[in-house]
Image 1 (cartoon, protein in one colour):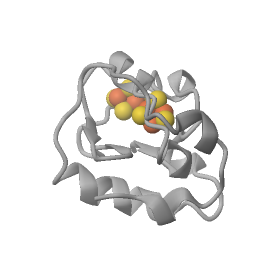
Image 2 (tube, rainbow, N blue to C red; image 1 turned 90 degrees about the horizontal axis):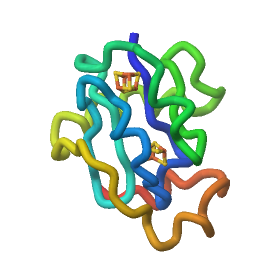
Image 3 (cartoon, protein in one colour; image 1 turned 90 degrees about the vertical axis):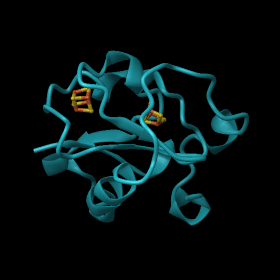
Image 4 (cartoon, rainbow, N blue to C red; image 1 turned 180 degrees about the horizontal axis):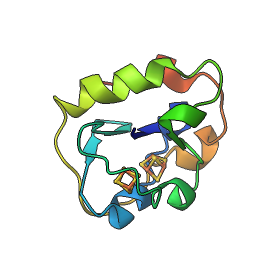
Length: 107
Ligand code: SF4
Ligand code: F3S
C-alpha cells in the first residue's frame, strides 16, 4: 500500500506534504510532486497536510485518477528527492481546484 499524489497538485505544488513525511519519500518535478510507492510506509501523515487535497491512499483514489498510481511510481524513479518545504508555485491559487491539470504536467 502507498499514498499517491494526484491531479490537483499540478501547478500548485504547495510542498507542505514533504515536511511531515517520516521517510522522505517525495520526489519533485517542475510542477508536481510524487510519492515513491516502495518507500512510503502508509503512515497517512501527509494526506491532511496538503492544502490542495491532492493526496490519497492508493485504495481511496477518486474515480478517473487511477492513472496517477502508475505515474507516481514512474516519476519517483527519475525525479530528485525533496525533503524541505519551499514556496508554492506562483500560479498555485489560480489553478487550485481546476480539473484535468494532467495536461499541464511538466516532466
Ligand atoms: Fe510519507 Fe507517510 Fe505520506 Fe507515505 S503516507 S508519503 S510515508 S507521509
Ligand atoms: Fe502537492 Fe499538496 Fe504536496 S499540492 S506538493 S501534494 S502539499
